[in-house]
Image (cartoon, rainbow, N blue to C red; front, side, top):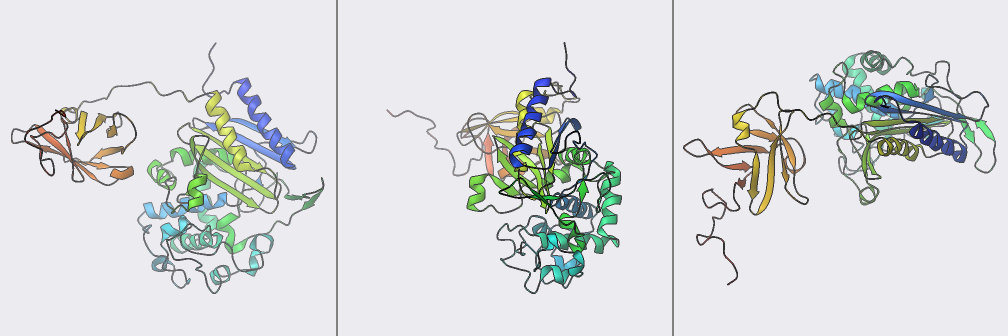
Length: 461
């Protein structure tokens, strides 16, 4: 008997249901809905509710809070990819007069712009956005609390500023740009700035009694790009697949990969906890796997989107309570359950379509001093360099078309790998950012910096 890639095994489905059932019961959430994505498709939906026979499905909207920030970040990255801005541009270049203009676009995306975490009182999440009609009302008289670029300090006003930047460069409201550039192309028809039936109501659950209180549902106004959106597990499952793979109608795979790359300096506690931040995406290491995504909360609602790109598994979890279950842990557990119970089946090995003799001449074993490395040609047209044993620097390199290669990651990101040839055309050695890699350890025939002792290798005696 065979099982299709799309279907989860009964035991896996039961484990997923058990996890969300425990979260809803112990977290005392009025309702909790979840979805799991594998291979770019939603393969499981689950729900638990305090109302008998009324469990919500994947079409019921919940407020998703700060997951909205990831949508706003995608809009900014689109502007970058179109050449309308550079991530290194200071804000002042495109949106003058904010009082935070020295911060760059990248620093705003990564929450390293030094801005305050919240807007001036009253608390923006429980009051009408009409109280803050201008950016100055959101940023306050002293927008900067920290030196620009020095530390990660999560900032809701920072994403309000990014939303205003989108509006300035597009000449249209943030909500309109969002719908035209992301929601419609990705088919996210149940994601909206205002709630659309059917949607869950937001509740506060008494911490010491099994009693509930309805939370107000405010229009956040200027703060909308930081947390306004409503969505469903069905829509967020599709959005998770996009964040893992990209979609050229919205943003390329390379650009979403850039969003998933750490961009914020980590403090000591962050290093211990294994968390950092990219460009509009949270990044953490949990249970031995790298997870990316975003969490969200507003009074009455909790939300989480978690992706393991390596496992090609994602989870979405939504609840309608102000506090209760820790959805970050629930999302990570849903990913783990699927990844461990049904490990990803790798694509079949396939040989290269074409073999370049010049590349074959480079592959094989190389030595940096006495450290042994292997250089391999991969099916995607790149070469990869890695130690033959133990840890150490490793990277992939893309061809430049002139016989040289440029590093794509890690220590060698942006560094040039250059084969150096002898007068007869054969390869003498590799020059990698001034490091000399030779076919033999300290090859006397290669220009090893500092030279090689003419007596060569010897023993103790």
